[in-house]
Length: 284
Image (cartoon, rainbow, N blue to C red):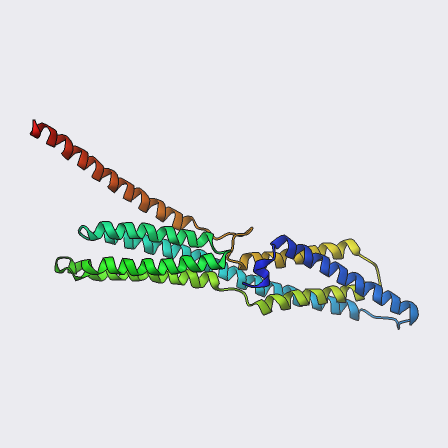
């Protein structure tokens, strides 16, 4: 975890805005103090050009960083959909296997789904997320062990390859999703962006000291810059914030699988009840 993960978003945003306002005020007062002691030469439009160029470069840096963070966000959303589809496909193919392997694999898939859903909730807790990842790895080994007898069964040899491919895709999708969650904008880029924003505030304070104050306009600009940088950090963070990863595909897949398992359990209970009812008259 980095400092951008530990600091609350509102603290980061307020700190950025206050920091830029204070930096501008410091530069403004320093330039005015220098002007009172040493009469500066008449200035042309050069300071305005410098401020415009600095703000344009800041906008370019923000756009570059925002694009990188948005790409990571899209990658995480896509990884969720891919994993949900892979788990659903593997579960459906396991239904082609004969008992008892079919029931065992179905139960293990449901447990694996529970772990993957718990992993999403534990993103903000590294130790808990690491423990869940280890549990998921052990669950994968159990699934492979339960699948092995079905693959080696000559009567089911025609579905062995699809079963192996579906299982491998399910585990690969989980690994890809974990990698997407850990993919971040480099910290050095975010630090450089914040440092450059402070330098722009310094330039603005220096330039405004030779003309009008424009405090309200510059403060509004700094608030917008702070809001944008905070949004970039929020998008880049995998932990829940104002911008969240869409978990709906995985939730829908989990709901369908659980409904299917519940229907199977109910069918078994109905069959057992029917057999018990038929056995009573036979005893009489």
